Amino acid sequence: MLPEVRYALLSLAAFAVAVPAQLLGAPTALTVAAWVVCYVAGGWEPGWSGVRALRHGTLDVDLLMVVAALAAAAIGQPLDGGLLVVIFATSGALEAVMTTRTRRGIEALLDLAPETAVLLDGDAETTVAARDLRIGDLVLVRPGEHVPADGDVVDGASEIDTASLTGEPLPRPAEIGSTVHAGTVNGTGVLRVRVARDPGDWVVAGIRDRVERATESASRRQLLIERIEQPYSVGVVVVTLALLGVPLLFGAAFEPTLLRAMTFMIVASPCAVVLATMPPLLATIAVAARRGALLRDAGVVEALAAVDTVVLDKTGTLTSGRPRVVEVRAVDPDGLVALAAAAEAGSEHALGRAIREEASRRRLRVPSATGFAAEPGIGVRAIVDGQVVTVGRPSPGSTETEATVVVVRVDGEVRGTLGLADDLRPGAHEAVASLAALTGRTPVLLTGDAERPARAVATRLGITEVHSGLLPDGKADVVEDRQRDGRTVLAAGDGVNDAPLLAVADVGLAVGHGASALSVQAGDGVLLRDPMGGLPALVTLSRRATRVARVNLAFAGAVIAGLVAWDLIGTLPLVLGVAGHELSTVVVCLNGLRLLLDRTHRDPGLVPRPVDSREVARDLTAAP
Image 1 (tube, rainbow, N blue to C red):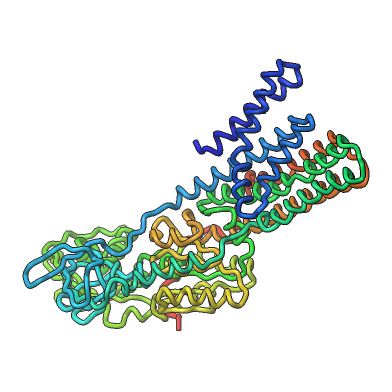
Image 2 (image 1 turned 90 degrees about the vertical axis):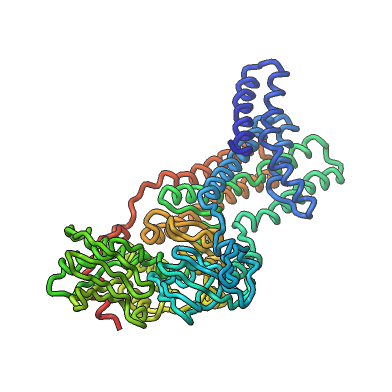
C-alpha cells in the first residue's frame, strides 16, 4: 500500500473516532489524542511539502491548508480543521494511486541495439561489447540477430527488418553493398558487415539523443491549479495578516480581531479550489485506463483537451504493421495460395506468414512440402506433390509500389502472383474523421515508409497531408514546425523511430502492446485496446474533464468570494463560514468524481468494422 494511502486512511480513521468522541463527551485525553493523530497523519506530508517549497521562496496551497486547519483548531473548531485535513489527504492519496498505477502500466526497459557483437579477425570470432566497435571492424550477423552497428554488407545476402527505424512493414533485401543500421533485425541469411560509423554516430544513438534533448528542453507541464495557487496563497496570507495587524494598531480588541482573521483564513482556504480540478482529471485517468489508455499524469489530460493538431505514424499505428494478401492473380486462386503456403511452411519471413494466414483464412488444404530451402534475399523453394514450387522475392523497387507482389512458379513456370499490403487498423478511417471533426484539421501522416504506400494509405483514410521517407529527426521537425505556429500537437506512434516524435509533441501516445520500449518511455501514455478507435474518445473525455474543472473553479471561487466578502464587510459567524466552505469542497469533489460513472458508449462511428481485402486491393490499384 502506498504511504499516501496509509496516512489518508489513518487520518480518516482518527477523524471517525474523534468526531463521536467529541460529540458524546468522551474523556478529553481520548478526544485530543484522536484529533492529534488525524491532524498529524493527514497533514504532515502536505505540511512538509509546503515547508520545502517555502525554503525555495514559494508559498503553495499545501502549507496554507495546514495553517488554516491549525488555525481552526486554535480557535476551538478542531472538527472543521480535521475535515480540511482529511479531504486534502484523501485527494493526495487518490492522485498517488492513479499516477502510480499508470506508471507501473507503462514502465519498460530500453532495448535498442544489442549489447554485444561478434567481431571477425580472419577466421577467428570474438564476442565484444557493441559500444567498443570502431570504423573498419568486421562483424558477423547470424539469422535472427540484431545488427550491432551501422555499416555496409561486404558478404552474404539476407533481408533486414527495418520496421523499428523506418516503419516499413516489409523487410528490405540486404546484399553486398547494402547499408544496414544498428538495432534492425537480420532475416534468414548470414551477413558480414563492415562498421562504417562510431557508436556515437549510429542512427539509434541519434534517436536516443533527440529524445533526451526533447525531454530536457520541454517545459514541465503545469496544471491550471498550479498556475494560480502561488498568487492565491500569497494573497490569502497578506490579507490575513492585514486583518490581524491593522485593527490591532488602531486599538481593536485582540480576541474578536483574531477570530475574524482566522475565520477569513479558513473560508479562503483553497481546498475547494484544489479539489475543483484534480478529481475530474484523476477520474479521466481512471476512465481512460478502463478503456485501454494509460496516461502518465493529470497534466496529460489538460494537454489533450487543448489539442488542435494531430500527427499520426503509419505502420503499426494506422495500419496493423503486418502484411496481408490482398490480391491473387491466377487461373485457380485457391490452388495458387495453397501451393504458396506449402512452399512457405518453413519460412519465418513476414511474407511467408501472411501467405500461410491467407490459406488458413480461405480454409484451404495445404499439401505437405519437402526439401524446403530459403534463398536469402530472393525467396523460398520446396518440393510440393513432386513439383518444384518457388515463391519469388519482390522485384527490385517493389517497395515503392502500393502493394508487394510475389511470383509463384511451379517447375519454373509462372502460375500466378500474390499481392500483399499492410492492412488498416480496425476503426482507423472513422477515427481519422472524428479527429478531424474534433480539431478542425485533418490529421497529418508521418512515415519512414516510401511515398506510394504512404499515399495509398492516406487516400483510403481521407488524409491530404503526407510526409513520407522521414528519418526519426524528420518526424520531430514536422511537429516542431507546427508548434512554432502556435498549435498544440498530439502525436501517436509505435516504433523506435517514433520516439523523438512522441517526445517533442505536446502529447505523445505510444500505440499498442507492441510499442517499442523507447516510444513508451518518450511518450505521455500508451494506447492499448483499440488504439485508433479510442483516440477520439480520449480527446473528447479530456475536454469534458477540463470543462467540469472550470465549472468547479467558478463555483468554488464564487463561494469563497461570497464568504470572504461577508467576513470583510459584516460579521460572518464561524460556523456558517466553515459550513459554506466545506459544503463547496464536497460539491466540487463529487462533481468531478461523477466522471467515474461515465458509462456512455462510444460514438457509433468509432466502432471498428471488418476490413475487406477486396476493398484494400481495389483502393491500392486505384491509388495514384
